[in-house]
Image (tube, rainbow, N blue to C red; front, side, top):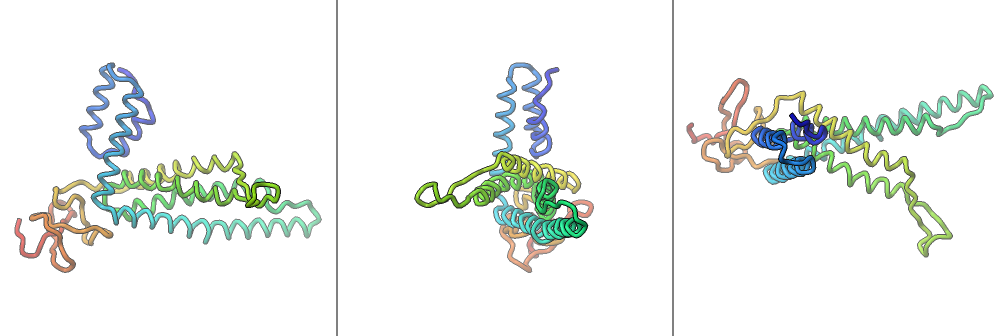
Length: 259
């Protein structure tokens, strides 16, 4: 049996929600009449369809979950991790100075620790985004990782602008150190793996019907327009009741609807 491309297969198994699509692609590839490029291209198409459908179904919930992850990232990194790192580095610097040793304030240790803390904060932000979401969490992990990429492009661009009086008439230039490109690729991957880990640790959300399109565990889904599980019509606040459809799983139904 032919071995499928590892990374494409990993994405297919962890991010797609339709098992029949996964089985069909694997079967066609194992028959030997399809190339590795074809398999990777089909996986990309399946992921694109899944992400577009998720955004179209729950646009506000997706946006709110991504924003929640970004807020957690900024609070953890710039409100907790970096202040602690700066305090520790300055304390060590002053200790060496008082004892007559050579001291470097922002040396390699500071650089590597800041990179590590940044990657860890990005992964934790993805975990927060996935845990607050009530749709397909694996797809949200992918969407969050994709959203991290342009954010870090802007961040690295702004941090690479410096004043150069001999440059163009604006006297500003851009210098992107090669190591900054490492962060540009490491951050989305950290967010992707953190999000997928969080999605695998929770009960996956499954479709109940075309009307609900997602599970509701005793509360309104964040920012989504709720629909009745029986008639499919939108439900206004305080006009629904919860109906048990499985062990611990409930859906919203109009008060007057029966079914």
